[in-house]
Length: 290
Image (cartoon, rainbow, N blue to C red):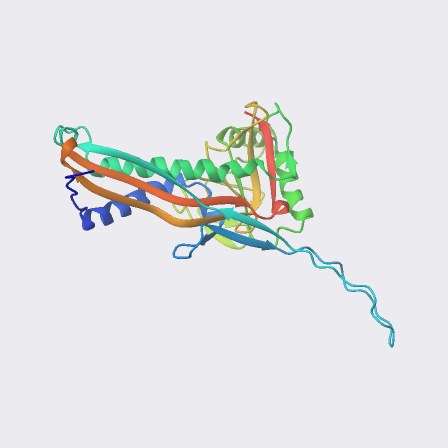
């Protein structure tokens, strides 16, 4: 626009706001750390391709002097993740800041939480996508359902590494109630929980950690998706850093600028990413009453 005056951003303020946004976002990213996380920042592409190699049949016996005539086919497939952007924009006016309504830093923190919730919605949406399932529509989650989740991964040979259960609070409530009804001790946020027997999940490292059941850590998120037209919730048990993958094109970023026409400061928070299922057998969905 003609005769427009652009006021440069304060680099120190922008850096401080980015640190604040990361800090505020952390509690809202309930399951992201259990994804295989990659970055394509700086690469001339918006997409990442992951090659999936098939399970090959066992080697066959051979006879001395006999020609090998059967060719073993290798037909790998792939998953392509194309990243896309999300953003929030607003102007924090001087009237708001000086009238003690909201500071610039509080506005940035608010945007950080909103961005984290969007990422959490996108990542937890994948919990409903696994082919193997447990539970029944309209029926509360049970301990037997949880055991079926574990069996599904064990039967698929996907328990060589750590696994984690990401469930809706109502599913966790149902499991606790079932344990109490059976005369057992309710699982809790113990001081040091084994993550699938390999990693350690310490208290405070994920505020959404709710304890373990049969050695499996449980993470709560109210963003766990609905299923069956909203009648149910669809949490899941999945192999850590194997079942699901998250790709950053760029991480949460803050841009600021003085906007004298609005007597305030412009605030933009944005990120570019994609989340996808990679190994279907490395997860099992829990479909139970909402």
